[in-house]
Image (tube, rainbow, N blue to C red):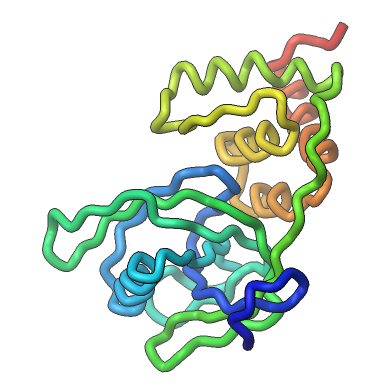
Length: 206
């Protein structure tokens, strides 16, 4: 597996399989105590590099290396504390989506993968139809504050809006994963809009 970051060529990334889905620009709090992940985070912080977060397809977070879903999001450490001996608290921020080409567990049980970065769709204006998604998301952001939806906010960006809804909706993790895997932000918004409309959470479009 290659470490080259060139576009189109696989890049090696340590993987943290979790029972959650990370999205680009999301923040995630983690509590780490296993040696393999302590070492992984120490290396990432020292080298100012990232690790990948993937939803577990088979297995558990602790113990034998879990099998990750193929599409995940790279994570960068933005804050940490070690107020309890042997327990590392982390806050990470999601950056880019990737797809695993191949993966294996090393002698320590850390999953390492060759990944290809997934391009996001070119920026496009939010359609009139999807404008009705904005007020509810603004209300959630105002009510929850930076802890729920950290700035910067991009209420005119279809991809950003879709990711924010995907992370906060009361849906199974597998459904979140499917939304993450979609390359088309408009399709993602269509699905979210239908979900909210069926539950009476959106005003009908004019």
